[in-house]
Length: 451
Image 1 (spheres, rainbow, N blue to C red):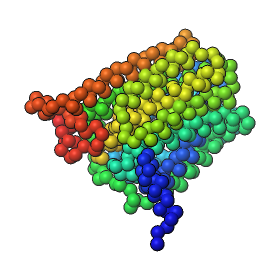
Image 2: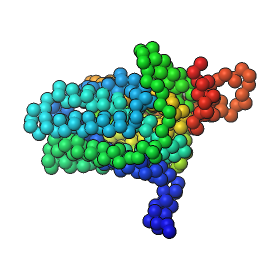
Image 3: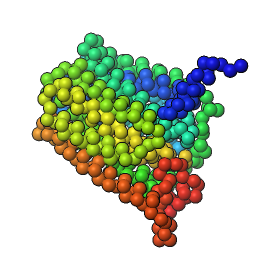
Image 4: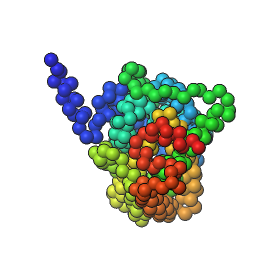
């Protein structure tokens, strides 16, 4: 006799856009991450507000702290990609998440005791960045182990929806928490929220994971270099992967500096408080969540949204630069968030599906390294520009440049599509196989990228 509750659950999970939830391990991951990410967004908003207070409102310091947090990811990210291909991902995530929990609790203690200084925030940001350098590529590569190749695109889209659902809730809760209990409370809540993801990871079943054959551990510096080069060659020789990484890196650098520009926008231009800042960040989350849900419902990733999302973000940013109204600014931040996530989530899914198992950690580390490098580079550059010319002009500059990059990306993608449709001649037979852009390459195709 079948369990009617289980049958109903299977029917729900078999609907379009929910396939990844058929996997028990993914359900555990999703539920734990959903709670933890709310805390993460609370910490991001609260840390920016704390730095704004400690620095006397200077946006350059916001850029410096952002750089401190993401610079380790840029430096260590490629090497962390090798770890993602070598180490057991579930156990690695448990260790790293525990470290991140301790860092959040340390910042909470320093803040509540009144001992916190801006250099302490910088040190903790660097340590958190080191943990993120390992966590990001491992977590990205872990998706396919939880759901298998068939459902990985859906899992990536659901992960994006989860992240941006937390992006809606976290900033709003952070603003209200700061107003009611102080900044330290927000840091403490984030620290405790890591327990949810640790419990979820600990309850997973290894026999239900889709475990690929891990590459041998490199035994010399030369082997490390060879492993890195193999991942970089795949990126260079796979047009859709190269386009995704380049476009996301440029637009994130130029137009997605929310933690640097939104706090002084709230406090200086719109004359708002911590709660208002939280609601502005929530508005970006609402747009991002809407885009993520649309991507889940849309099924297969459509790479045209990599360029189109950048265009939407750019246009909305230019309009935001002209706004001095709090409600209008909130409204304009919705398409800013939607465009950014439509671009980034589509790029992530396209890369995940295009990469073979043995290279996934290294290729995803290239993506996360480039994306994370945009934070220190863009944060310092845009923070310095805002200190000189003000927030509105900085927003306008970033918006126009993002619009240009998005337009060029649309042209680039059309050329990739045209190349796929063009008959292959003898002279072209040695070119990379761009038809592999949306399925895991076969072994002979993987070998062809190593020449």
